[in-house]
Length: 508
Ligand code: BGC
Figure (spheres, rainbow, N blue to C red):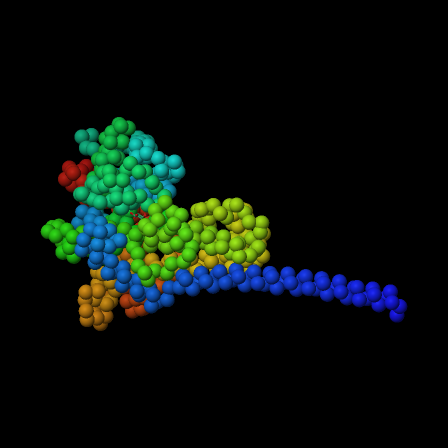
């Protein structure tokens, strides 16, 4: 072999080595980056961990905070608000009543005809409308004028109004799903806004009065007979259909729960007398907090960037308004650790761009290639095609965040059951275990899109309930969805708190 040939062979070998080094180097770098991304997931899984032991600590903390919130105003982050609802509908309600439901992204108006006997289906008409974004942060007059106009249109579209006697004002149940300090069953002042609403001039004002003034401005002669939280509406409808219903939980844009409490346990309102000996308490559990709650850096960042930092901590871990944004923040972190999402779309840095229904759709994508995940990443986040393994990773992130939320919600529910002695243990003040005693059938009314529209969420919640309570007890706890309950229940409560005696109501 001549020198030239040897030189050539050496040159080729060197070049091949160089190429190989580059390729191997790239592979090593890419593996390292992938490992970092997987590391982000592992870290997330660890910090979202909800072992049954931890869930039981959350159960105990919830029950303890409920006691504290009932003992004194400000005694706990749980407000435990009085509702002045001391009796729940039982089917004897009669007449035509209206409801207006304000509290999320939509508002609803409905009319229901009650026949005076319990009926498994309640005949009603509903009208839904989205709330324009600017009204959620504008002035109270604008918001209430808008609502009153829609209500007026609804009433005017009514066909035969002859069923209501002419001298009778229409009565309305107003579902206002924010923390309200009630003065009576039909009046109360707004304590604070949640869920992205922020109309400063409303805080501290009496809500029913604001609506009645707006109705007068629009020439609508209607009276607010009941001002209720959505959870209370849900409990009312749940109880109407099933008298074993003792609590109601909302898991939608926001989250909350209410339950039936004995008046003598409401220490902060000593001397509170009701004919039934009980009262529905609006817990405002969205604001619950405990050091046992598993919290990640993403939750801390989300809270700091939110309009209400250090507020609604439980809600930020659980509800539909926030889950999508926690997932988005994890994806952002993954994109910082590696180039798997390159070129990084500016959409990814937009808060709340990844809404929770999208998380549900990705999580529940059962196509072998995760086509729905690909579509959502492309259409909603402008992330171009990513490999299947990355799409799988994103599904896993949705799973971790959703599973934590559902399991914590389950712990919250068991916390309420514990407080009222329906968890099979005899209650936190009970001392000796009563697990040998017969557990009573216990129904919890449930409402909200996260539970009704997200199967995985629902399954995780049920699974955790059984894990915490044990199968023997869990079989007596029934979660029942109340459809349109928050509004229908408000109409029912308007009926039971009507200013017209039942006899004066014209039969339908
Ligand atoms: C509000 C509650 C409401 C819940 C569900 C929370 O943000 O504070 O009053 O019941 O959302 O709509």
